[in-house]
Length: 157
Length: 157
DNA sequence: TTTGTTATTGGAAACCATTTCCATTATAAG
DNA sequence: CTTATAATGGAAATGGTTTCCAATAACAAA
Ligand SMILES: [Mn+2]
Ligand SMILES: [Mn+2]
Ligand SMILES: [Zn+2]
Ligand SMILES: [Zn+2]
Image (tube, rainbow over all chains, first blue to last red; front, top):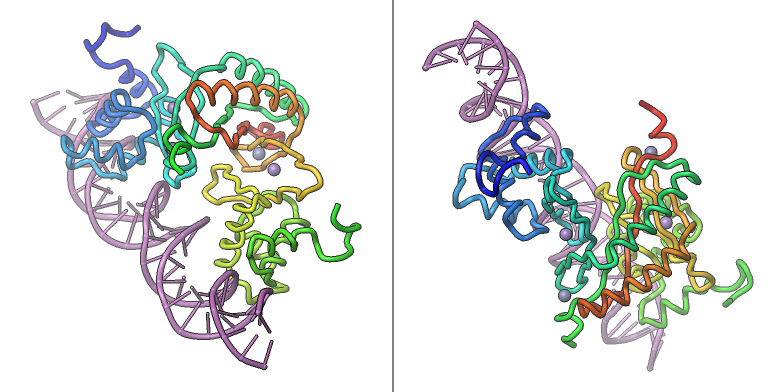
């Protein structure tokens, strides 16, 4: 717990400078949006949230920053199949808050779920071990998503 | 089992006409490539395999046909995160041959695996049931992929 | 604080897989 | 065969993302 809530420099400053990256207005603005907003934002979503206060920050910078944040593991880049990448904050150092996604194929709504995560993670661990051995494959990550119709969309004819 | 191996009209002709689609040279050529080739072909891969024999079939037709085949459930459209969609034949009526994928994040090689599928499918069934109830979400599909480094790529420094 | 090095930036242009458009052609029912 | 229309190909458009580059800002060193 680096600081009391809301006081002092945010915990990510150290992470940034420690890796040789410079801490710029744009990057702080993007991190702020990611930390405070709902999840699953596209680059353009972020751009539009930032633009009123920082009209001089370009979309290009958003993309570049998101790449950096991804590579630092501070942000997950997600693909829900609608042609644009989505990003979600990785929850900092406090709790990993690992979760998977339910994706509505009709309205593209995405639901985070953590139910059954323990059982899933347990099975995943076993599966990863087995696969690693059999295929000599070093697994670093997994992707689990369920697709279907959300409440609203399965209701309408 | 519609026909003895290799004799008579392929089993998919019925499926096509039954849905009101016309059976064209292009569609047959695409199905042939999908049925015979290795899996995970991109639209352009298919185009290049077909082109020597059918130089008048355009890439647009490949895309359109793949959409149709997808919607008929004869082909799965896959996304391994390299910016182009891949397609694999759904194995026709004989056996579903359900499998998941190991994706190398370095060289983009993809390994089909069926190991642990039974356990996975069992857990998936339970999870789907639970999620369906809790979120009132009608699950129709799932996506499971493991990412990491393949044998070759984890070997090189 | 001033300076120098260089990482970072914005904006325009490029990229590129996929889609759209539309006049032409091929399929298959009658 | 004739006919209605599904399907086609090629060019152009689309749209998210990347590339390019001269201008700028961050920050370590002085
Ligand atoms: Mn999420
Ligand atoms: Mn496969
Ligand atoms: Zn929905
Ligand atoms: Zn590899």
